[in-house]
Length: 257
Length: 151
View 1 (cartoon, one colour):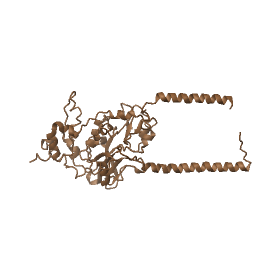
View 2 (cartoon, helix red, strand yellow):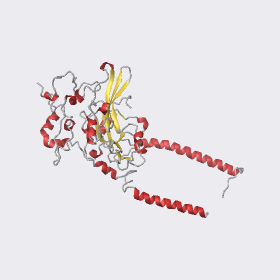
View 3 (cartoon, one colour):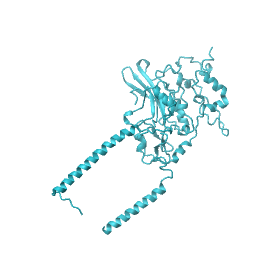
View 4 (tube, chains in turn orange, red):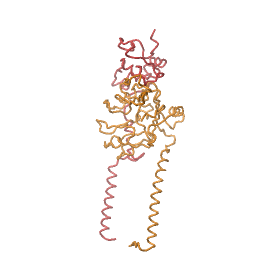
């Protein structure tokens, strides 16, 4: 057995040296961690595999709510007004600078005007849905592997593995998840995985009467989505959270959260 | 090594072996196939029925009306936006008529004047002031060629 004898100058030096090594190692790993995080933010898979995303043109959205309706019908989303896979919000900036955000029934029945016309400085619609982040917080919070990202970059739910713990609902910064009242598991936008794998557009994209939603493959340089991203100034929601959102908005005002 | 430690190690070893046996039987076959999830779940997610069919499927039987609509201002408005999902309409065993939504209110979801609605995207009127005695917009406007019927 080795015994430490602190009175021995040799062993004291050794102790100090070892402490220094441990402290240095901790410091280095913590620094490497943050650098690694930065690298991860830019490390989107490249290749020939499809890597799906969505573009939304706020300047084209007329707030008709057909996307919300189509999504609910297509995916059997409960019709109660608090379950949505996609929904539309109306942002109104008044002349006095105050902001009014409303989304009556998620925009399912369209919008009626609530703010008096003479008080409005600017008003616009913002369709929202799952951002299909490639660095998704919801997927990381899932304790069972029921929330995952498919090889195509679509964030999906395994209904058989979900235990309904709701951690992912709290983790999602965009509020895109809910507990299905009948299945008792978490439900969310699948980017119509059953449609896109058959070559169809997602239901919300297929049923937009103005073409405000663009679905496409980010790896397809000739594709519609890449062209949309090139031709417009696009932003994602909450970029400071480093979620790697793949939902790109054209004409996104900073008021939108 | 003291004998009591040897026994404890043996017990630990037993637990570890038990853990791996249990893990083998409790983990789904396809778990870890692509990542930290059940690979078969991808297939399950694909199984859902696509209720909104392709526009070409509509054109298979209704080519004339699809052509007519595509020439007019409603060219970008796909059939199933107003007519509803068509998957049962093309189902031979379970054929169902489509229910078209033709109320003033429904036309108004796009065409009622609204300050947040981009004026250059869609023609807008005040539903409360425009021909309020007509019960339906389609009495005058044919939705497949919205302006051609008016003279």
